[in-house]
Length: 441
Image 1 (cartoon, one colour):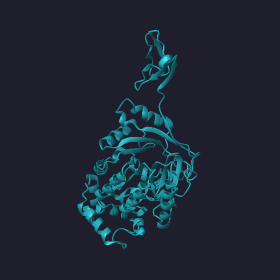
Image 2 (cartoon, one colour):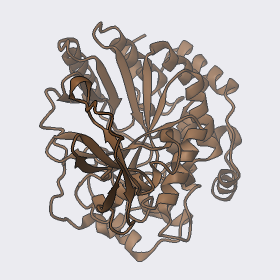
Image 3 (cartoon, helix red, strand yellow):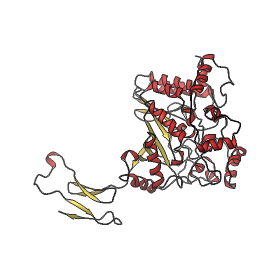
Image 4 (tube, helix red, strand yellow):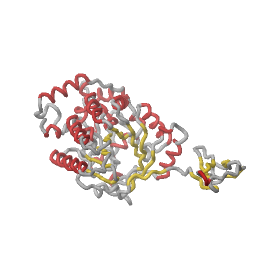
């Protein structure tokens, strides 16, 4: 197969509009004939209202979804009653991170409520243009830690491989807003992939490659297989991870052919970006179960967002829903300080409140790690509520999820007291004064 077939941009050249081998065309046709995907009631209503001439098969064709993305103000205003603030924000936009929403994801958005969580994540507002202290275009210093274009090498044994700058749906709080655009430069993608693979091949300490972007699952099956096969041929690469939001915003992309490809390259893991329980639809459930059935361990990555998911009950509903579709809650991120992100960011205390409201109150599997990706390239730093109260001699004094205080004998071997004295316990004194406890014997 010629190299150019791996670098077709579907969104610019959808199938049928470019010259391609007969074998490849028949493979895609066969995949579409045998692929069946459900349509939820909300999506079906949206399709009938705004795409009445489209067929069920077209709606479930991920190429069709990409071609019909909402990218202009006139399209957006057709589907939603826009506020003046939203209109002005769209008109002011220049440069990267353009408006982009798939029809499927648009079907989940309230047409009348600008405060609806999903709407706030993808429809621009003028607050994006307000610059606050500490914000930066590249707050995580990824470019500084990039030895070659497309590779971020921050941790000793793993690299981030940015293989595309395209997403099907653009989140307004995107960490790589400086990078994500509406089109893919085919010449640059080939150069970036070649340089990236050479760097990984020449860096034997790299055992783990996270393939991200943009969204790598917006690439064609041929590109994805070529990339995974090249990475799998590198002897010291032990595992490959894919970072994506496709199962959430473009679940139709998870075709049977794609899952057949992915399962050839185990151990392969996938981190999926979830934001809110309203994303847990029939379509997304189908996509995630299909991936899990292919033997791919799935983890979620959720950004804590003000007024969107910064409520314990909302977060708990999301985490429980993820477990039901076989996605393990992995990270809860403090929102990165990209330019114009102040209206999305919460105080760190809010994130600690989320973890405190989950830990002990639900299954341990439902509790993600709360992390700050440290500005300046410091990497992910985990944060926890204060469960350690202090020490009492050799004993560690701990507070549980109920606020009760307990003592743990923190000694080993010869350092332990063998006098036979009964262990000390502590009775919690007050929920309002959590540092106070009284000693009893």
